[in-house]
Amino acid sequence: MNTQSLQLSIVIPTFNEVANVQEVVRRVEAAMGATAWEIIFVDDDSPDGTANQVRELACRDPRVRCLQRVGRRGLSTACIEGMMAASGPILAVMDADLQHDESILPDMLDKLRHGCDVVIGTRYAQGGGTGDWDEKRKQMSLLATRVSHLVLKQPVSDPMSGFFMLDRRVLDECVRGLSGMGFKILLDLLATSQRKLRIGEVPYQFRTRIHGESKLDHMVMWEYGMLLADKLIGRWIPVRFLAFSIIGGVGVFVHMLILTLALKAMGMDFSHAQTGATVITMVFNFALNNSVTYRDQRLKGGAWFRGLLSFMLACSIGAIANIGIATYLFEHRTAWLPAALAGILVGAVWNYAITKIYTWGKK
Ligand code: GDD
Ligand code: MN
Picture (cartoon, rainbow, N blue to C red):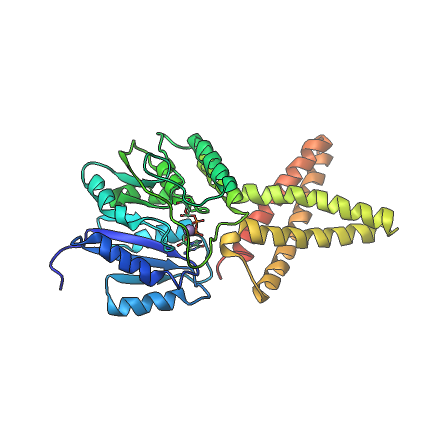
């Protein structure tokens, strides 16, 4: 047995990184010298066989482990669960794709041991850089960084960084308050922590990806918005409910559009047009909620259709509750507008609560 006790746990989230994992382990080993480390890969059931590749490496080197999650997606939750599975007193998070410069790990560790709670690998300080990013991505990243000050308690040059190190105690203190949404786990940690953290920064050059591709897509801005909303108002309103309600609002427009088309262009009678519009809007709302609100646990294949059925059933009961309550209030001397709004609110809360459990909940 190795007599040196473990000093650093490195958490590496992966999705389709089969061509990178061996090299990233090799580079960490070369960078860390005599420091005792472990690596925990957190893989979201990558179809390219990343998890098997990691386990193959782990058979030869017990410092490497694989945490394979099934039916889940999400960079932030992967990092959180990897950190919770790690044993070391100091934790690092790093990408698998070799874009983060592992050679600064010893510097980061040094800073952490000399009084920092968190050390961030930064691209926005002297000596750092974003490599071959195009102008659009640079602008987006800078904008996101600026907006992050809404939730940050102290300035840091690169709160969007996916490369950082922290004292395990920082995680212990705030893990129960983390949002776990989207890509920005560092921002989540910094915004959740209740105390003033001592933060260190080590600049590095963001490298070009050679194997595999980026998982950042058009939803990244939405997820970032949801993370900020959760940090700002999540204490009072669950942001999934917010997303669910926004989509419900969009659904009203879709309904009216279909109804108008059916009545005016197709000459249908009202009750058929209204029924058709209702059914199509339910399918629309379900599909959108599935790929946006519940993106991290989206239903696919057969589960998609079962989900749709339970969603339609729940929303039908919600509609009955909505009409019942609004009618009751209206008949008991409430004006039509507040009566209608109360009905809508009750219906929305019902739909959200029931579909959260029966449509997207774990069975
Ligand atoms: N487990 C898991 N689940 N891993 C994921 C997921 C997921 O849903 N999505 C991405 N990953 C892994 C990738 O395999 C990679 O190792 C790492 O997370 C980063 O993903 P990329 O797709 O390469 O992101 P990027 O290069 O565009 O952006 C990265 O760098 C930015 C700057 O540091 C991310 O780390 C960003 O969060 C960061 O802001
Ligand atoms: Mn990358």
